Length: 123
Image 1 (cartoon, rainbow, N blue to C red):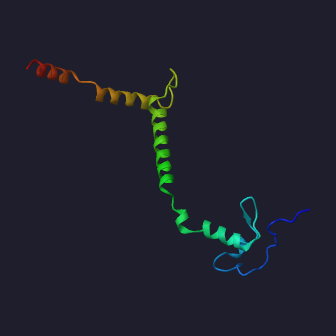
Image 2: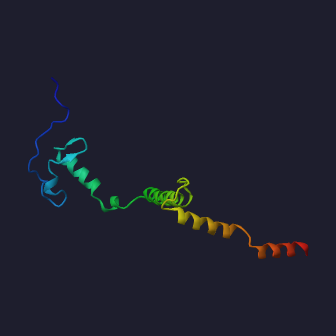
């Protein structure tokens, strides 16, 4: 049987335990897929994972977060105002009718506006 290249020792009260760098409750806790028993690995993990700048989201995370909100808002808008729920009356029927009326008012011309454009085209 071959020996493991790095000897594994049991967690013990070493110079790192209970100090300001690593709290005592981290000794013997899971790190990754296994328990870390090496104080140098525990200290390295603790330094990397408990820096205040790691808690701030990166620019990419903020962009993804913003895009997630945009996509959710777009799907909610579509679901309320444009989705076809059939011919029967449903919860969004009155909202959909109001929305379509507002769109028609915005995109269509009133008879007065049509007459005004006819007069402008004749001049």
